[in-house]
Image (cartoon, rainbow over all chains, first blue to last red; front, side):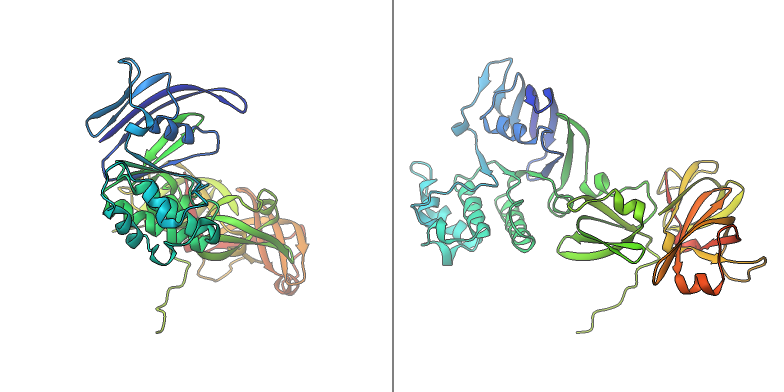
Length: 292
Length: 132
C-alpha cells in the first residue's frame, strides 16, 4: 500500500491554489490522475519523486517512510525508488539506446536488467542507434525502458503519450501495461484522455483545483449511470461540418472514427478537440458477425 | 436532442428490462431501458426525470386516430419549418415544451406541413433515453 497525504500552496495562473490530497494506492495497481491542466497532477508526481517539498504531509511506500514533514523526514530524490516518464524523453543524444540504458544503472547493479528490458520493450533492432535517428514513439519506448532500469517501486508517467499519434499511443499503452504487470509496479499515470484512462487504469482520481473530487473505477467515474443509454463512448471531436440543414460531427473514439448527427444548436456549442460522450440506446445499433 | 421533463408514473419490470411509463405535462410516454429499480436509484415512482430523444427519431403525424404501433404521441402545433434540399427541420410547440423533428423535405411536401398546423409527434419506446 502506498499512502500519500500532501498539502501545499501552489501558485496557479489565477492566484494561489491550495493542493490538498489523500491518495491510497494498492501495490501493483495502475492509477490515473485525471483533470484539467493546473489541477495539481504534475505537482503531486513531483512531490512523490522528492522534486518538490510539500507544506505538510506524509508519503509511506509499502511500509517505508519516504517523507513526513512533521517528523522532518524527507528522502532525497535519488533515494526514492521511482521511475519517471515525461512527454519529453530527454535521452542523451550522443549515446546509443543501449548506452542510454546502461548509463542509468546503479553502481554495481547487474547489467542483465538492460538486456531484459531491451527484449521486453522490443528495442533489439534499435539498441545501437542514437535517439536522433528514432521516431518519437521509439524514443518514448527507450525512455520507458530507462525509467525501469533501477527497478522502481513506483512508475510515474506524466502524459507520456500525448505527443504521439493514435497508433503509436496504443502500442506504447500496451508496452506500459506489459511492464507494469511483469515488474509488479505500482504505476501512477497522468492523462487527459478518458479512453486511455479506461483502458489502462484500475482506479482514477479526478482532480479539480488541487482536490480530489471523485475517485473509483474508471468506468464508474466516467460512464454516466444517470443516463439510461447503454452505449456510451468517450471521444474527441475531430471535425464538424454542415450538410444540408444538419451537422455531421466526426468523433475519434480510441482508434475508431464515428460520425454523429447534431442539430444546429448542439453544433454551435461544440468545437474541434472537445471531449464528448456519444450515447445511444442498446436497442439501436445493429450487430453482426464479421465474415472471415 | 429533445429534452422534456417528466415524472415516473409506473414501472413494469421483467428481469433486467423495465418499461417506464412517464407523465410529461399530461402526456403519457413510455421508454424501455436495460435497468431495473435494483440497478439504478432513479427508477422510483414519482421521481422527476429527463426524457431525451433525438430529433431525427421523431415521426410527425397529421390528422386524428393515426393507426401505427408507436406508443408515444405528443400533440402540438408546428411553429417553424426550415427547409433544406434533402432534410427539413420542424419545431412543434406542445404542452410538454418545444419538440424538434428532422424529416425529409419530401415528406414535408407530401404531407403539406405548414406552420400553424396541428400535428402529433410520435417516438418509439426504444428511442427514448432517460436521465436524472
